[in-house]
Image 1: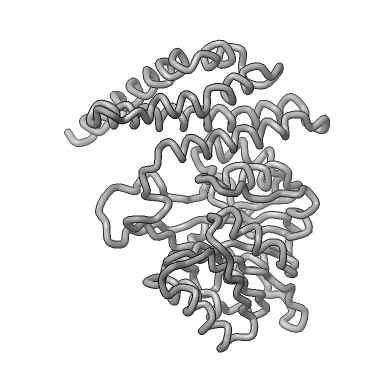
Image 2: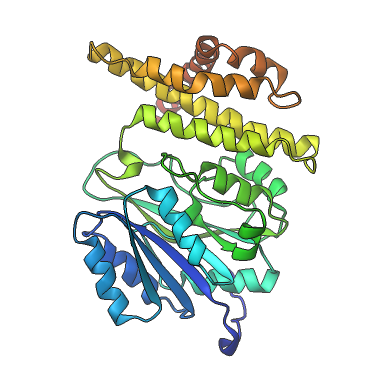
Length: 357
């Protein structure tokens, strides 16, 4: 990133760092060290111990004794969304940022983000991440978390979202943004609680409503893929439920009278993406149902999500008319999605084969 004149050191804005913690004793010290060693020092660091049963809570307390910037909240386990909301409630900074407790930052992350936010009076700064595998093998090439097409340009959220989505550079992870706290509170944004994909609606709406937002290509965030994490757990029915809750939260915003037709189309484009993610889970559960005679996960997904998908299809001036007709019947919508997936997968294989030759 091009160099930006530093903020006057005597007038540093406070940044609240929210770190939900749950059974991550092997990674937690690396995470916390990456925060307390930041070149930017004016931090409020909130560690939310979400009912950990390992040594994570004790590690949090140990760091709080050594650094007065750190406060620890011990609470019963309610999931990632509730932990983040708890941290947000006590945040007092001008800016707020989230960090998962098994990930870590570059040492100059906050300094660079705040410099940009202050210079351009931004409500949201979007940045990139570097994924890595830890204790597992696999391919994560589709999760590059990279921004390249609209970097270092101030835009409103809707314009930036359109560009990001069209170029496959929209990432729903809430940790990959610095937020102006007053902006988040003015729009009453919060994470969904008790579900997977708790940040889908929060991340989209925080991006969507911003009037001044900038994307950066810097990979400040190091995102760990490990066995047993939420990201790698195969909870397909719970995942589909999370997408359902996200769709309902986004549908609530469709009643906003300030949205023009273009804004509404963008909102429903993301709803359509969530519906397709449900179909993807459904495809995977059908394989499970075949290999496990008593498994009925695919039926559970239909029962769980069908009414919400139909609700989305009934909204006038929402989904394009074709999708409203096709998605209204779960099986027809799934077959349509599957046909497109198979075609795209075949094209990808052919492209790969031709490039190899």
